Amino acid sequence: MDAKDKAKDLELWRKWKSTQSMHDLEALFLHMRPLLFREVNKWSSLVSPLVLEAEANKHTLEAFKTYDPNAGALLSTHVINKLMKLSRIAYSHQSTVSVPEHQRLSYNRLQRIKAQLEDQLGHTPTIEHLADHMGMSVAKVNALTANVGKRELMESGEGPVFQKQHDREAELIELAYSKLSPRQKDIYDLRTGSHGKPALGNPEIMKRLSLTQGVLSYEREKIVGIFKQLQNFA
Image 1 (cartoon, rainbow, N blue to C red):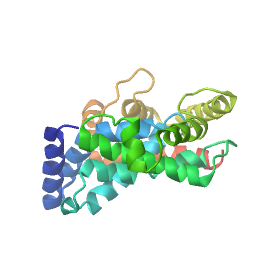
Image 2: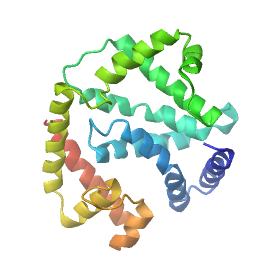
Image 3: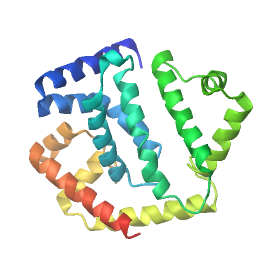
């Protein structure tokens, strides 16, 4: 993230904080959307993207409300820290692959430090830099990433356990999708970029489907409810 983006973050946040208007909040969310998508995509192979996005929006709004520019952290860093809670949803959808709790906590801390350093440096930190901030050897950081990153998060997408979980998640998504109304399907497709549709933000979806903000919010709540209901009974 360059200095221009950081300045824009703060500018939009200060404007919303001052006006508390939905219009300014939408502008702030739209500006932060690439960051939200990046965090949601970390878990999208395990959980429905729409469910993740709903949770991400909730935690991001919490971050906007609790952010203190005088504390020294960037707004993006504060948002990322709040979005670490998305891992809880992913863990709840995990199969029988078991990773010790202390390794999960260490991995989460590693991810937070990595995100903070990326904001500070403007590029991905080296493994040596991460190890220094973790107070661990490079070998231990590599082992942690391999043990948790591959087994618990399954980001590589390899192995029968991942495939079984992935297939089950795909079945749930298709089942939930089949229960949506035609308009809800359009909203889902345009929000997630599914079924050959482009991934759009709320303003673009409202314009394309001729919806008001109130109607779009209502329909999105209904969609999320359908997905959550099915996943709770999975």
